[in-house]
Image 1 (cartoon, rainbow, N blue to C red):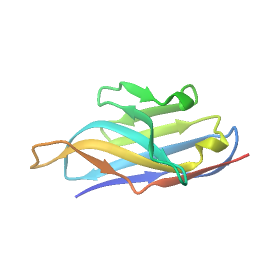
Image 2: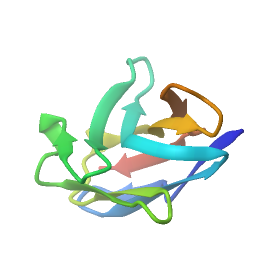
Image 3: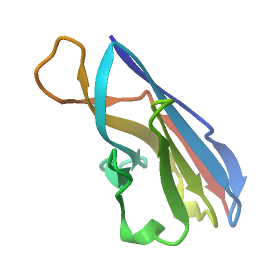
Image 4: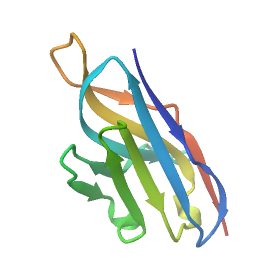
Length: 121
């Protein structure tokens, strides 16, 4: 089995910062891209940022310049540093990993359980 465990969410005032972490564990052979998605109440889940195993990053426009995604391949962990948070960033943030497990022949998507981020105005 594979587990993605997120941490670091919480309540913060507008303009504040939070750092999310997501550690992957289990019978993992290799991890390709990792990323963060979010879902606000009544809205669809949307991509926030992704990072490849080689470190190439991609961000949604609304978080560029405020959020930074990074990863530690040795620890199988991805991070999301969120600065200058805005009320519209309020959502449940989900970690995602495209990985292949031991004994498998293909990459599959795995998701964390989600962590709540609430930004007050």
